[in-house]
Length: 358
Picture 1 (cartoon, rainbow, N blue to C red):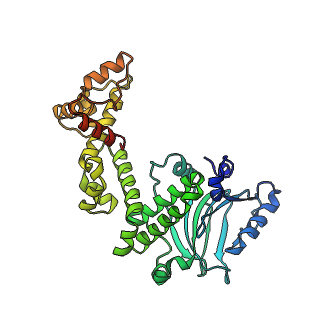
Picture 2: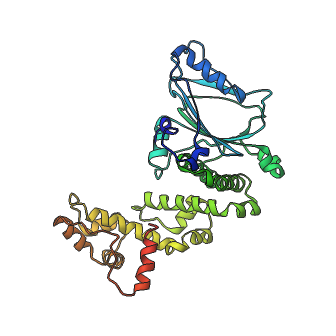
Picture 3: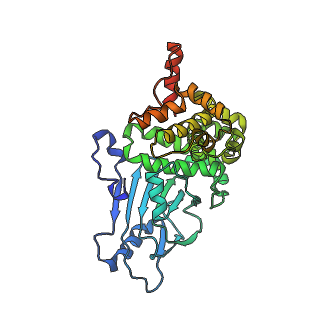
């Protein structure tokens, strides 16, 4: 969904509260576009352009009223339209803002291919009431505005948070969460807004002020985001022979016990890694254009022992690698999600439910 489509999808009455406000300069003459944008943004920031830059400034802003929070998306010209901004000296509010900018290419990846991790994100957190100045050419910016009253007891700790939040550990999880909110907001009903706000506030507490109490409050949304990051990391590195729980712990910045708890309902982290390797091998064997030997395919997904690969494949899918390749060559692709040979109805049903997570 493009930014311009955000407010146009039909919605029923239960979702009216999540229909965004929309402001655009696109219908104005190019020479008036930046002035209109600057005037609209004047309540929070002062904008300026380099002298002689009169290329126009076609831009859109969508703002969601979440009741006690505001979430915004902005689309701007990007490269070739430099802008400078600073916080107003006497702003009408003292909200905090959590800001995540993208180039146009980065935003397309973030929205359309959320499993593909961006090389580096520039999440920042700051108070509108405090001095701040910067410039940029980002074409997309998502922002979350948080009233200070939400965090009165830890306001001093949040004020001390560095503006730039590293894209690693809890900071990376918070950036993932911001992108997830952006993707899902157009589909969230008014009835679910209070739960969304609670989850957002818990994530901010847990990621920016990670005290034991705050981490406990954020445990459910934090664990969900962490599990999704772990799954994406496994899928991206499924061909790496050294992919292991220890490596995941280092990449995610979590302990082994936390990682094991995350995957407890998926049969364990080692089993999940093995299953993703086997699924990758199954996909290659089902592709008639792939002519590599089965041993080579096994090695490409991290199995150094061909016989161990065949046994694991047979246990997982109820057929051999050769069966899958032969079926594909005969024009009949065997599904990796078909039930293996039945042994116990209850066990098979539980296995089916676990498979639905993969």
